[in-house]
Image 1 (cartoon, helix red, strand yellow):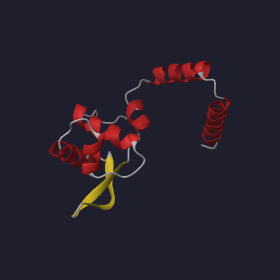
Image 2 (cartoon, helix red, strand yellow):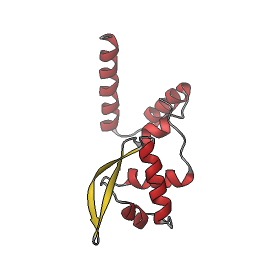
Image 3 (cartoon, rainbow, N blue to C red):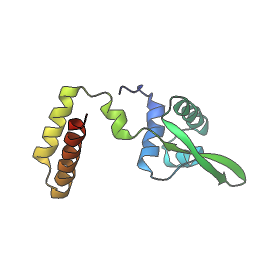
Image 4 (cartoon, rainbow, N blue to C red):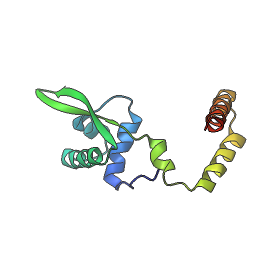
Length: 123
């Protein structure tokens, strides 16, 4: 699935949301950012909301004000991988396997491959 490329500011907002497992308000994002204005963040959030990258996940409080809480719908890996060519995927996977020293992550990958093969055989 090809996703829309984000601007620098939109990417900065998404990176903050991806880095935090908690839902965040515009003010939370401002506090976690390096110099983004609240106006820029609010504009980016409205756009990201309109293209389906984030969703309003709840309501929170900021001092006395009620505020929306946001969380990402699109994961960072989904976003990045949408711009990678299929041939490059195979090269990345091969490189990951060759350079990985974690038996646990290799077992997880093996389980995913087995599951995918089973799903494809069932089609």
